[in-house]
Length: 444
Image (spheres, rainbow, N blue to C red):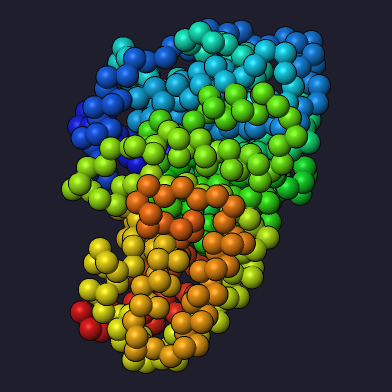
């Protein structure tokens, strides 16, 4: 979730443990430290109440069918654990649930670290059945423990989902991956093991799970910078809906209490209903989020998109890119750094300069009067497709993000990150981007 190290103490500590997945992110993300440091330092920690493993007969008694099964993979063995964000989100889930209802069931794979009395990494993960509780502190019951488990390893995620599917059934399923996100670099850093999930490893694990149990209704990432077209396309066969953020997600993450409360209160929610609820409650939480003017791109954003339209969007983008490439005059303009990178140009995501909002890119290019009508018409078609078919709900505090970003670096094309992804293999976009980068380098 959420960008890396937020104050100088955690910066020093994490610098010694951070794994290779997010190498270089410490310096890059230091700009957000002021606001996050203040909020997290002054929030009262939520303590986890000790709980014995749930007896088998108790697990069986909870096995009855629910409308929604929400599996939350809380990988908090990082600075988010130090800031108690994992505990707080669990506490929110408990507070939002209503006693005696069976509309929704939350099951959480939980791991965190503590800095209250010296840094403690804990010992592996616990699988928790979230129970309704209005008091402060975690009362959820432990179903299973996995000593030594590495939350940055996809096998830990797979074991969690396998175990949940053996215990619980539901009409609809949602998977939330809770952690730090790094765009094409992947998700779920574990600072004890120095690990994290690459997109290809995560994709392989999800493919196996879907083969065994069927598609998820929703896959959501409560993690920064993950709502990119190439990422969503990678997961398109594993869920009907993808929820994620083009921008950083603040440390407190999703509004779990309101999500749980809404789903507990009544049944009959479709996958699109739930997707809208998640985004609407996120908007409610961050509508007046304070933004440091020095870092003006750090605006909260969250969107839900329909995966069934991703192949058509890929085809539309290919057609547009071919038209662009054939217009040499426009390409020269497009390659100009002031056109691409200034604040009035193609918007890039906070500390992720290769991630550009797709619709914003189209809008800026279509304002240029020197290109032919075919490029303009194709661009308008993409914009309308994104807004009217692809996106279910979008919240953008800045108004610059429209729901999905594309890979568009300026000077550095990272083949090791981009080309293993399925979107790179299926589309013309990689060739288009390489030509742009090469022209930028030649004219630098």
